[in-house]
Length: 337
Image 1 (tube, helix red, strand yellow):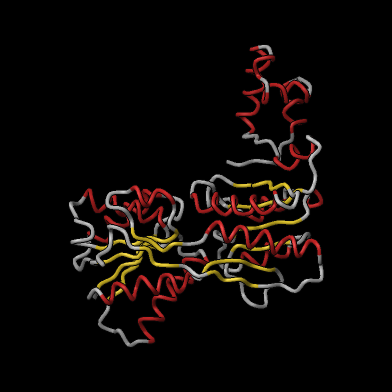
Image 2 (cartoon, rainbow, N blue to C red; image 1 turned 180 degrees about the horizontal axis):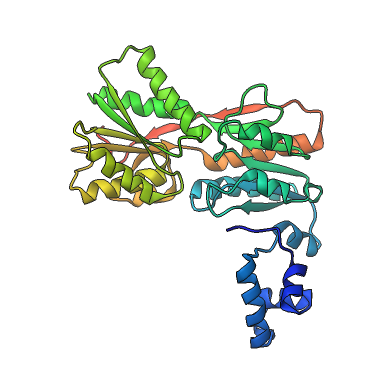
């Protein structure tokens, strides 16, 4: 579990050494006596200590820090966004510090409260793990300029940058309908996540608005950061008497798990079933079959957010701005064109 509540001074006190010795044990362990090093590492293990990246950056004499709060780094979408931010900030002499929990279930609010926001000029906060109403509480605890990576309401007090994910899932749905599918399944992420709810609602509304009452829609929940949950969701769908012939996965991690599940059950993709993911993370072009997906401009999301945040830092009176970037359906081998 990610923990920044302990400081290096706490570790030094518990291990009975100086803070300098703890620092050497972490950075140049070869110069610390084995017994001392083992004692320090034992304390670190027991306290789940992770060096505070902001404090570490300040201790090196760096300044002009910008924080980026992400729910996880297991999904390369977030790494791509961070790279986009970093590329822009480096051109403007700003240093990006990425702060992440080790799962989507780490609460952004808990991490935000644990940080002295006076140490940073601003924040870029991923809203990918926002649940019902949580973003309002998080917004109330931001004391510096911030940009949110989520599709925020137009009356939100903070600027936001995100993708047109609603259009993305509708494009997949329309493609399946054109291919003659009448039973389509959606494998979502966590159902209480705002992103899952928004994408599911877009699909349901499209079917209702176009009076497509003959199309059956099945939903199975998985976990956005867990490939295994996608595999298990595919198995559950195939246990139904009326099995779907096409699947929309709400991210690529889930879709890759679903591909594995289909292979285990002897389902030929795309001949027996079509599977399309969302995000276009790098590994999707190397799966078997290569995964069709919604191409999301993740690096550009990061760059646009960084540019927007710098504008707010320079001009605190700047009005909030909502930026939505287009996405594109990318066909590979898991869909029939």
